[in-house]
Figure (cartoon, rainbow, N blue to C red):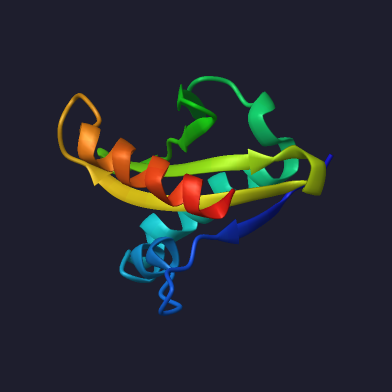
Length: 112
């Protein structure tokens, strides 16, 4: 089952994940785009090196390029075959910061 990837938008129309992607260099962007394509094709059936469930229906897509780990927080709307990208970071610490998870959960709640 194929999924459509949507992007969270603020009330002003800003799309933080698209802005994050636009700031990446070409090779980083290509790696992340390839992960997005795989996620769109297979959804949450991917192995743990691609995705991880965080909590409360929040997932993370986990691309890595050149030693830099990226995290894209999302949730899936199964009935509509949609995946909504909520938040993105370049991971700088071993553990994902709670503030990033909380922001993604807040955005998820706004979308529901």
